[in-house]
Length: 433
Image (tube, rainbow, N blue to C red):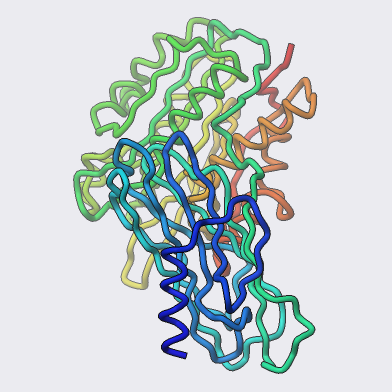
């Protein structure tokens, strides 16, 4: 077996890749699937380590992924992800990073698999995605992993790997609603890079902010000059634009009449002061301690109250975060239902209720909630829907057969992310001309 495995590795690194093909692992020729992404110049190949083409009960194996940079520039933050309908009887390493790949360079990622003795006989659908700082490999590599409880069972089809060219992108081919809302104003905040190590980076928050801006322009009809986008907003920016306890901030100057639509989006960290039971947005210069949170954090109820004072036609607030605090008994979560009276003129979408955790959807390079929120809008426009309400969007976002809960369960088995909605579901947010 040892000599065989060495021969396998030799073949893996020397054989020419096969592109766009369904390939079955075989003992004589390891599986090798490759696609070249011209924009980022990444070539990706995948192989399964075990020669018998099955994952047997009690077995350990690996999926090898070779990533080559064929371009003239460096590829940064190169990371591979495996996700799918995972089983408790099978342990899989789901994420691995190789950092920077120089021009002409190669890196090998190894995803280790370990099956328990109780592994049932079935097919596990898995997907492999590769991302780098400036883009996404434009296809997934789909793996149908054949698992056997009995090594003598030949009825199961062997493991296969194929490329999948289905598009999951919300960033490309954004449709236009043909509408211009010249009086509308929006504030978009994407907080990714925090000054204190107690708050780690929020992956894809900047992507979320940039793509949300494009949707506001193309579909909602907002004037680009009236969309204020903040990447890594500090405490002062929150107070300047939204205001303080004494009243609204700069945003109020752009609300000229009761015909103005207001849209606010936030992707970043949230936290909670459990002594006062107050949820906070976390600016990038805010620390984790309760004192620092009260000093630098921006209370959610302050934002809601100041937005409610605006004489706007409609106010939409979309939040891709959760609000958690640490108590003596562990982590405690809050959500906007803990704020008491809710302003009637605001519709609010949040990534999760207090029971869940907002996840990142690595295949799309966006927050999971933001991805489904925007994809729902894009799909309805492409399907010819002329009027889209807040309720229409939330129905799709919260759908357990295709929305956030479905994808969350599929990708992050055992976790629960159920979005929250407050306000009038009949509020019209998009009209297509």
